[in-house]
Structure formats: structure tokens, C-alpha cells
Length: 339
Image 1 (cartoon, rainbow, N blue to C red):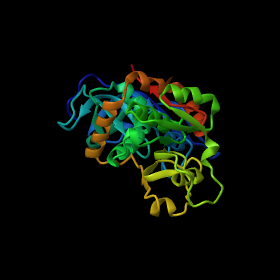
Image 2: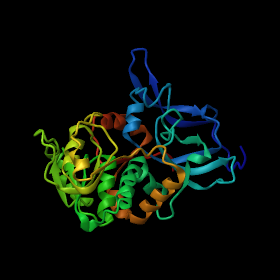
Image 3: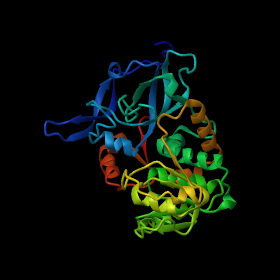
Image 4: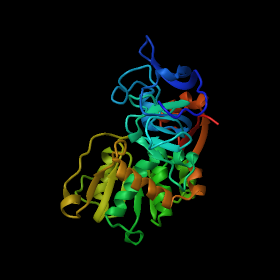
């Protein structure tokens, strides 16, 4: 690689997940060598990362996420370029990496260094700090991808309410903030009554109990309650949301916490013209990716996005991943990696 700036350490700290002889996967801080990293074009010193549900899955041996262990999870990273083989990036550039294969089968952002292809990297959006970029991270980018679809579909704030299910999670809470700051009236759904005040503080106009999105009536349509929705839950929750969406409305789905199965009559589609859109943010093409980051930087107010974060150290990551797997977290877990 070219463009060396400061001397690099022989070893660096990283979360490493290993599979024990008992078949149990454990994550701990280990020292790794820079030579252990994949030989891609850009070496980045990571300042911040953020926890996502995929990280929790990777850290517990989900082979659909990560095939080989030992492995360093972390699908988000923000930091400084220290070496580059491309003129697109130079040492000192502030950059973010979210999605693609980072933290899945490529050594991830829960470490002091990553080495990635230049095609995965976005220069820090001008209106956001690196820390704010990681409060957003993949979860916020996923939420913004849904907001982007709502915009493209021509849905305006005066057209009606927007529902967000699983609203205390990282994706859901980011969606509540973004939609509220864009002027929409947001209905937040949650199974955590103790967090209702939190949801209102970040912009929800109304909070409803999770069970209200679990219709068992068997009806082909339900009274229309919202013009658009972001669903992070899947299963019968998604079915109920579709049955309750207004004419020409839009439902974006990005999760399956409840179930990966969907049983729904066709009536919302052929009578009300409802659109169901899947949100798969990891491999978003770069031109669209840059448009979505631009949208984020335009609508986010730092004082609101900061309400989502709980900052932890690298040492606290293993326990936090365990809590995330068990749905015992709210908002975004921001990991401060380096000073």
C-alpha cells in the first residue's frame, strides 16, 4: 500500500468470536496483527462502530451471516484512512463503511482497524460527525432507505400517519426520529410500555401497544389507519399492518423478529393498491447509497439523533451483544473504539 502516514502498531484490539469445543460461540477482546486483515485497498483506523442485530447473530455462530470462525463482527465502522492504494481516498480522510460484507465474512468494525475495498467507503457526509454517522449506522441507513421510498412514492406529511413497528429497536427508533423531523405524524408500536415516554421524546405523536398489530379476525381488510409504515417485525404483525394501510399506501419491511413467514390476503393489493417494498440495505448501489446519506444529513438534527445512543467501550461489547440478541436494548448502541 502507498501513502503511509504514522507508524502503525504491530497489533491492535478487536472483538474475536470463536467456537468452543462445546459448540458454544464466545466473543472476547483479543490482539490481532494487521497482517491478519484482508488485503484490500484501504486501511482505516476505526474510531466508532455501532451494534446491529446482525452483529449479535454473527457473534452467536449464525452460519447464514458468518461462515468461518474465528471472526471479528461489526457491520459498521467510522474512522480515518491511514493507508490507501487508490487516489479516491487519502490518509486523514474521515470515512464511514456500512453494509456490504463488512463484519459478515470480512473482518468487521468491532476492532481498531479494518481493511476494505474502496468501493465500500463513503466519505463522511458534511453535516454529520463521525460519531453521529455511527449513531445512524446500518440501522439508521436502513430506516432512511424506507423514508427514501416514502418520498419517492409521493407520500407527504398531510397525507396521513406513518406507522413504525418495533419502534424501540435501532432501526425503528431511527425511523421515528427521521420521519418526525421530516414533518410526518408518527405512530410508534412497541411491546415495552416503560419506553413509551422515550418514543414520544424522539418524535412519536402516538404510541400503540404491540398486540394491536396482531389481528386474528381473518378479515380480508381492516379499517385503514396509516398511509405508510416501516415494519421491522414481520409475520402476522406485517400482515395486520398491510390490512390496515390506506389506499395507495406503502409498507416497507426490513425485519423478521416475529417470523419470516407472511400470510396475507391479496385484498390490500388489489382493492386498496397498497405497495409492499422490501428494504435490503447492505448491498445498496453506491449512487443510491450517496443519495440516502444526503437525505439523512439533510433531515437529521444532532440533538435528536443523540437521544438514541448509549455509548459503550469495546470491553462492554460482548455483554451488549448478548442483550441485543435477547431484545433487551433500545435505540443505538454506539461503540467508542479509539480516541
